[in-house]
Length: 179
Image (tube, rainbow, N blue to C red; front, side, top):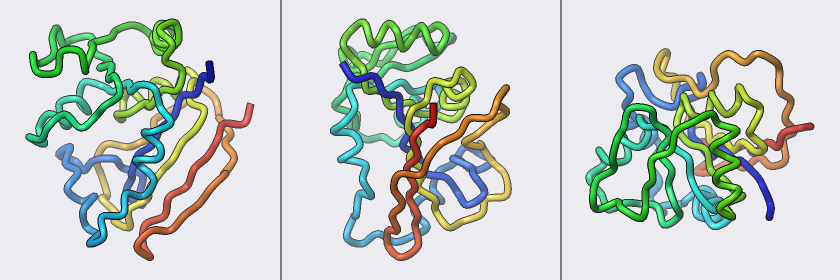
């Protein structure tokens, strides 16, 4: 079984994943009339499950749409006690340290994991558990908000393996961890 922990996320030019109020409306500043998906569906076809933080889970629920994920979703939270009934069998709450959470998922045959959510990503990076990062940079500067990256106890080095431009404005870079 392949084991690979990946991030696929958009940021502002100044590295924020949400504005100061937690909003993400700025992601739609660039018109996309042809609805180019910028590699998201291809990425999702290569993962087995998602780990997302509580705040990201709540943000997805706030969209008022049908549950958008076909893969199993594990919501990492110490405070949530249950998920909405309509998400039973699709979403599972999970707690613990990042490494032990991954070991549990690997033990269930889920090896290719998508890590999502600011604090969640930062925690998995802090424990050096990220193998691949795809960052889609939207050409806006927010000036403040929720940063993608936080402090790390040690430097981590990545290699650029792919760079693409979409809609003549959006740059998407994919990096793999150098070990």
